[in-house]
Length: 357
Image (cartoon, rainbow, N blue to C red; front, side, top):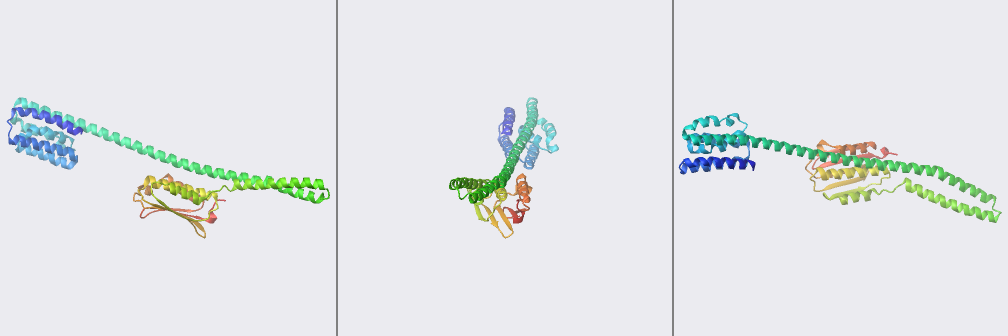
């Protein structure tokens, strides 16, 4: 748009010289030819065709003197070229066409040509500046998105570590309750039982001991229930994975689940990996469908996540997400492998004996 505005100004100045020339077919032809060529150059905005058209217009002006009136339009594009002979071709052409002008029209011609060179330079500087600005803007936006992605991945990893730490602490508390309170209650029950045998002849005391034993039995049952709730926080891996795949709106995900996994740490690990893999599909892939399988084999568990996307650049370069997934798998002495074949695939195998205690 800026080039067309510049050329409109140059064209208006060129037409001022028409008042001293008779309007005939060669002049009209030169006008149409120069305007058409200049507009076409601005439209295609490519280096080599621009050079050919500019050079052709300059050479043609040697044989069509009326075209010299509109040479500033060609000078504008010549100065934008990277070829030095085009950028300085206006000097000999001015000298060549000097005899075709009156003094006043020649100075007007000279002024218009120099103005075209100046405007061309300013427009080129402006376009370069805007190109650098947009490049910096795109780089800033890309860096911002990259930082947001890293922050999100770090937050997910932190959440995963917090869940593991919480689970570990719950297990520690459960063990302490079982080892300390549970043993004390068990010993108290044995003592009450022994006292009931010793004092069974005394009915009133025997009834009181029976009441105490009932209370201790209830306390023991409550402790066992609390320990079970603390130690074995229920995580239904199939239900969680079904919810993750069902709520994934980027593309349909087919879930194949056939495993019995007891380890809570391993369940959290698989959940975190699946969540990260689905996030990568939505951000880096153009997939139309995805597949998730969690299978149990005699000696190991297998997790496969794949899609049919064709954009695999991010998969080839890797990222924090893939690194985190690999580290989680290696914590369980497992194998993490990726493959690009009709989409992106993640293969995970974790040995059963390699699970964390």
